[in-house]
Length: 129
Image 1 (cartoon, one colour):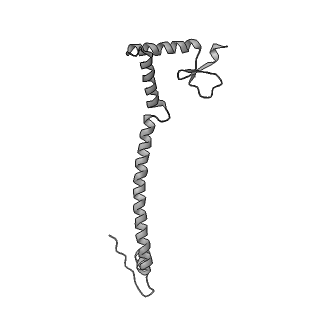
Image 2 (tube, rainbow, N blue to C red):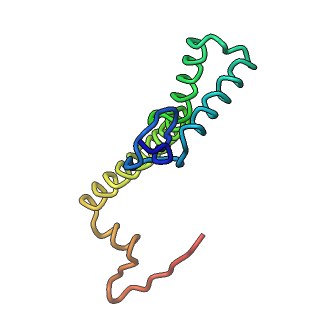
Image 3 (cartoon, rainbow, N blue to C red):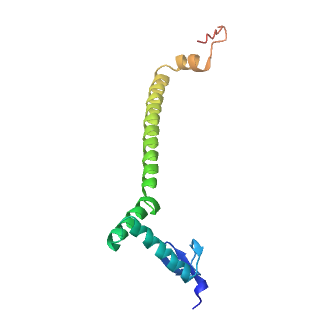
């Protein structure tokens, strides 16, 4: 086995044929990386491997997982925006229903007000506000 043909993804070692890789490392570099991680953990009082594993797990879930905190915030913002759009379009639908009833009841009034239609012998004056 060639040590230079090992690639690292997170803290798991995969063969070089793996599709998703972060960088190419030798086994010595992997051992040094793990030693550095252990030194940092010991410096911050995480010398117990269970506490360290729990902290790494929470960091992974919070920032790197598919359903991370960042993703959840983005989804929450999307839901809020879609709910606002839903209210807006429901109001537009209500206005359209009122207009439809108005058109059915008084077609001439609607045509005169909306499209400025008039009889051949009439004049139309448009006053803008």
